[in-house]
Length: 202
Image (cartoon, rainbow, N blue to C red; front, side, top):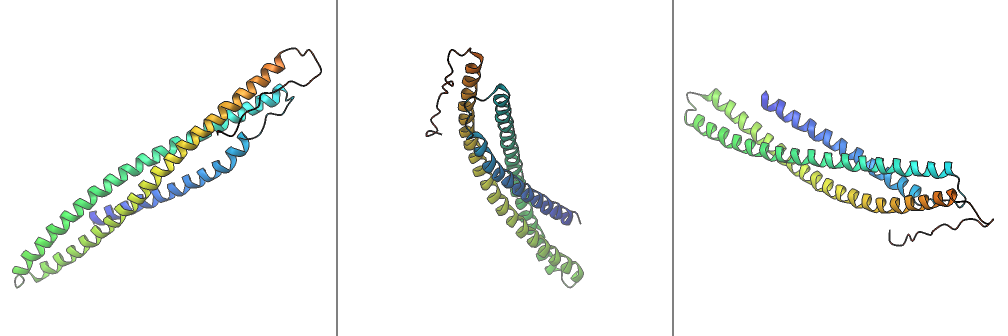
């Protein structure tokens, strides 16, 4: 009964981990569609203080959002690493249990005339233990695949974050120059010249 409960609990954890991975993948896909379009918006010449302030808030908001996404992904990676270690430990215990129950079967066979009923129980236990071992091995493989995928996902998120931070820094600088130009008294009717940002290196 305890083994069955433990097995069902492990399957529930695996299902929950799979759902979390799907959610994170969907979130990453959404960020990749939204973030570049916002960060590539140019600062309009002659933009007023309110527009610049709004753009600053948008940049800060998306930076915070992306940072939170990366942090959550790393937390999920750590959770999967723990689950992987736990699965390996469970496989070892299940393998030991197979050997133990198999030995019990051999002992019961030697006393088959006196303990036919006990032999049947031991045989059933062996089959159950082998089934549990197979399930644990399958789970270990699945968690290993998920762990590798999560590592690649986190590496990509961190790389994206670095690239986006660089783009945001450039945009913040552009906004600050625009604000400085607005704060200075104009000496002619010509529109202020805004610095151009080379996007080729991002």
